[in-house]
Image 1 (cartoon, rainbow, N blue to C red):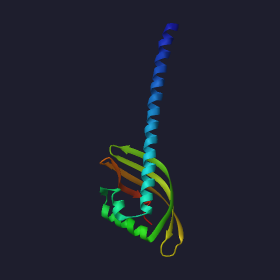
Image 2 (image 1 turned 90 degrees about the horizontal axis):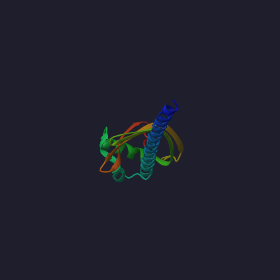
Image 3 (image 1 turned 120 degrees about the vertical axis):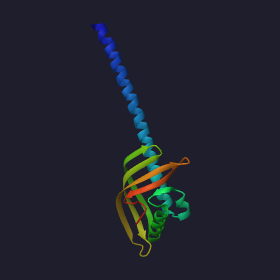
Image 4 (image 1 turned 135 degrees about the vertical axis):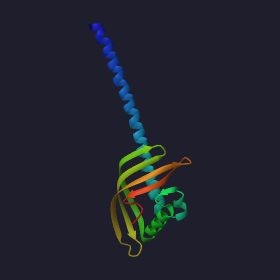
Length: 150
């Protein structure tokens, strides 16, 4: 009877060790995805803070949904209405499927109205979808409250 317990315990230990290894690999990729989303959003806000339509256009996919030109015009109007001063955000969820990454997040930003210099704090919940094209992550879609518009 005792000889039977040893192989069962050994098999059980192997199964547990295998599950632990799978779990740790999953954690690593989730962490990498979150770090990537964090960096993409921070870099996009930084680029927006020094807005140049030509430069920012390079950060947006040609297949942007619904329309790249309208999106860039909206950003330009927003930038010339209120100067972005500061932004903070908290990632809620990050999903990667194929060559797309979607990040949902809550955000706060401080802006200064260009006409009056009044400071305004805005808050929202948004989702950024990126697409990997030519080994570069580009903005593919902005959903909910846009971090960029005023």
